[in-house]
Image (cartoon, rainbow, N blue to C red; front, side, top):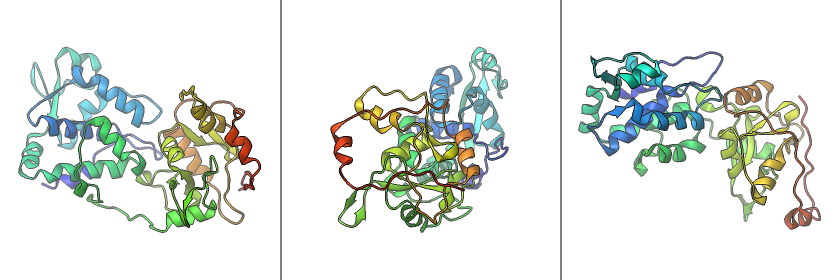
Amino acid sequence: MDWLERTATLRQWTKGGARAPHKPLLFLYALGRFQQDADGGLFYSAVEEDLKRLLAEYGPPNRTTPAYPFHHLVSDGVWEVRTDRGPGSPGSAVRELRATRAVGQLAPELRAALRREPSLLGRLARVLLDQHFPPSLHSELCEAIGLELEPTETGRLSPVRRARDRRLRELVLTAYEYQCAFCGYDGRIGAVPVGLEAAHVRWWAFGGPDDVDNGLCLCSLHHKLFDKGVLGVGDGHRVLVSQHFVGRSLAAREHVIALAGRPLIGPQPGARPVAAHHRSWHTSQVFHGTPRPGADLPRSRSREDSRSRPQVSPRTPTG
């Protein structure tokens, strides 16, 4: 049985590019628990809070009960559920899963395959990570789940449906003149930019093209916050900051909250700004909550000093 192919073709609800990572998150969680205890089952009542937290943090803005993937993953042949009544799931109702002491586990055939070939676990995890989450979130998602991958498992080991364009990073960084579109950071070591990344607006895992109008040059911090749904890009190509974000320090206020309502920095004339349909996808599928109103930038010495240095003026792209 080709477990990689089966993992790559999990049946999921899809409509208009909507994200539905509920099954992949449960599958990843189960792989992490298998690493820790290959024979242990996952009682729904014991893992419900863990799954809720994962769905809230890594799922789409609309909330869904973890009972949904706990029941429906059975249909993909990689998961089984049994209750006090015997084999089989009682359904996707939370009350029934709790009342019947439902316990889930990787399917027996898959557990046997993982014991025969331990490296399979890392390859399955890579399939799930590559197909459902951006690279900026892979390490922290594995840490949140308790999944440990060997260094040899960090390469692209999944069935690849399409290849990424390796030129995208250079094209996007050039379009934005090697500075973060949110904060203007432009650090270099010699001639080499450091801490600058090309972010997909519509995630590559969800059909986002490797095109400049689906990209943003972002510093490492703002790339992570963008992919986590803390930051977004709204109408007029202005920065959105989620009201769910809380930060009381000067750093949090200056580097995140104060961005609310600001125009993007770039792209340079002649480069295509982020396309409206990619912005719309990110806002509906990744950005969490309601945007904050525009905020004034807290005064600080670093900001005052920066005003004496030449800068590229922020502008609102057209098109």
